[in-house]
Image (tube, rainbow, N blue to C red; front, side):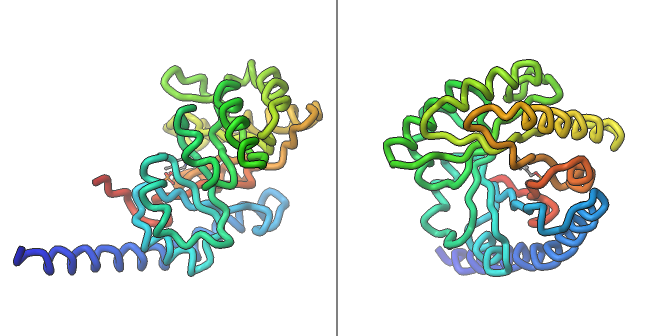
Length: 250
Ligand SMILES: *Cc1c(COP(=O)(O)O)cnc(C)c1O
């Protein structure tokens, strides 16, 4: 018992340190994103900077929101639900970016504004059913397994057009773009090839003008590679470590 005040003091200092990390990182990251956007002929404001907030405690997320953060992305249902009541999310776009099991859809469909990680017809159907019950239509992105990795979720590039066509017909979901997490690469050249393949898929599928699908967002790029992603056409980047520091798993 006597140790408790010490523990909570240490915990408080830890939170303050994490807020300072964010304050130091946010401006420079925004500037880098803006420069990458300009390099590809766009404006900084054309690229959405989404903070990947997994493992980040609610007070730190709230601090980041006060400092102007407009988009957050969570990727574990249980963690998001456990933080939800403490988060000050008014005016903030809430994205789900992790692997989603169909039996968990119901618990988040009223708490997110977009689900970026739709990797099957089955999942899209489950989202549509729950959204319809709430009288809404859920914006979704289709996750593409651009590296063809066996251990990663996502629709294969070869099956993309057919899957988009099928999901587009589901009531209660609105396809608004594509999302990808390319394989870990040794070189920047290699990662750029994946980003460029995604950009081409995004353009090609957009040109097909599939009914009820709108290719607006191309979500790719994380802390280590977001500038390369933006230069290849990403307009939504998901950044965790570079904003909040190394993740601490508890
Ligand atoms: C954690 C996560 C990110 C951010 O990763 P960092 O390397 O920390 O920037 C982006 N996208 C998804 C889907 C994630 O789970």
